[in-house]
Length: 197
Image (tube, rainbow, N blue to C red):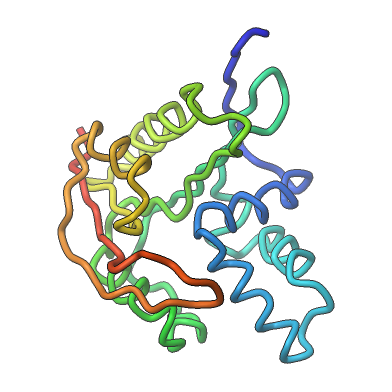
């Protein structure tokens, strides 16, 4: 079977894939957070709530800032990224002890091109999808006039860290990882940065 990767801006019809891929990128953290909304009675189903959030036209993490990768027309992965301006409202969830370390690192990146989420379905891995999405992310950062690209990754996400290192991304800072829901060997959230050339 051919391996034709195409990229296109995400649209409202992609929000279900965006929710699933967001959860893949966060290794379950997104679903854990969405499930808390169910527990509070704000949602009936965690993934349905995540899908709704991805469809919010005003959400920086939603489809408006997403690029979908497809292999032969089928969704394979996504990259959500945007320019941080420094005036973003701090979300309520940033106070949660589990999520707080990520937002502390995010706060060090104002003015950067922020790679919020890069994920590839397991069935599409090892086919160049992640690298294609990351290279496109750097290209969009350059077009936007950003000087740096930044992101946060888990120290145990070795495949992703290798990809980021291959594009010159280096650790700038780190925060301790607070376990959630299931056991995890992760010790740190890593803030990675690279100049946009």
